[in-house]
Amino acid sequence: MGWIFVAFLLYLGMMILVGVKDMKKQNNTSDYFLGGRKLNGWVAAFSAQASDMSGWLLMGLPGAVYAFGTGQLWIAVGLFIGTVLNWLFVATRLRRYTIRANDSITLPRYFENRFHDDTRVLLLVSSIAILIFFLVYTASALASGGKLFTTVFGLDYHVSLTIGAAVILIYTLLGGFDAVCDTDFIQGTIMVIALVSVPLAAIAVTGDLSSAVSAKLAGTNDYFLNPMYDNGSKITAVSIISQLAWGLGYCGMPHIIVRFMAVKSEKELNKAKLVGIVWDIISLIFAILIGVVGRAYIAGDLTATGDQEKVFIKMIIQLFTQDRNLPVIGGLFLCGILAAIMSTADSQLLITASSVTEDIYMGFFRKTPGDEKAIRISRVTVLCVAAASYFIAWNPNSSIMGLVSDAWAGLGASFGPTVLLSLYWKRTNRQGAAAGIAAGAITVIFWDYIACFGGKTAAEATGLYSLAVGFAVSMAAIVIVSLLTPAPGKEIEAEFDDISHAMDIESAKS
Image (cartoon, rainbow, N blue to C red; front, side, top):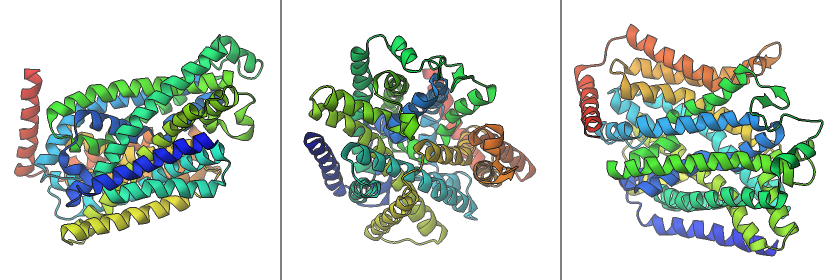
């Protein structure tokens, strides 16, 4: 444990040093929230994917596979499809449009500038949606950190939660977007190494993986390795649709698509597309493998104690500290889990702070502080958001998968259809965009939290993921309201035509 503690200490210290280094680059809010649009392709790709996957990738998904079987892999399939489509059809077009739309540095500001919204309605509804759902999302990452420190060091959950939150807060406060992206690059690299190395090492020890899993689950879940079964029962169409629907969320995730906006050139963005897609497929395949290998390798049944989301942690501890004396290597791989947690929490803190500072304080209330004051306000906002998420994560029994699922649905349904139609449908107007954001958010909240079906929520009664429903409702609201209200002005349509024409020329050249 001493060597593992040293590994953690060195890793956390390195993250803070990055924040101190990048603090010198923060001259204005564009630097603090978007890094001055200077990201290179490799950093953009690793940062986008690392901030996307979080502790969910190394704890939530492996835990779901460990508990219910490979029928959970359809989530990964949906996410991979969503990732590829997001890089191919949203990244370049959104980067161009945000520059054309008065150099927008946040998603709510892009909506306002894209639709020339002088009423500030778009700014308000999108900022509220970000605040609500990112508080929950950030809480999921902090809860992951708490469970990691508790499992590894035997610390009280609340002490563990405090340690993880404090380190993330320090380097995000200091270095802003540059620190977040630089640390994400480091964290993304560590995540991939841990994801690939640990399950392969465990397989080498286990031998025949299929036979080992079958022997471990004999008589309890004979269909564990069959992706057409979920928790021993034949998987339903609703379950597959719900899992695939996770992919719909990508085009509406502010902490992911802000990376597209920050890349310094389209040449670097094209490089980022390839790197990001390859990173994604490797990480998802091995995350599923962790859940499978964990069933064969780990002693006992983690589901009996509700610890299935700790399968990767338990595997590393058993493999490198109990079965063989390699604590330094085990510590480095455990840092991979910490990296996954931190790489998402920092991005979520920054996005929420940018929404409050840029969109509400400076936009809605029409305040224009100097650059230094604006950065101070941004840092205070980061602190407040972190505190609120900290209290949401206070319950040690909170489910990482559940928190991520709710937040992902809310953000994807609120922003996904609006982003897509703002980029590809000229007839979209500000009334339709505002209706779509509000309809998506309200639908998800109703579907997941309002118990009006015999004491059950709609999600519990139907088994259908709220993102699938919310995305469809939001899309319909945008189209219907846009068609029932006046068309966008000629200036707005001219901007849309310019972007579309430029994209068509690039496509013809390629």
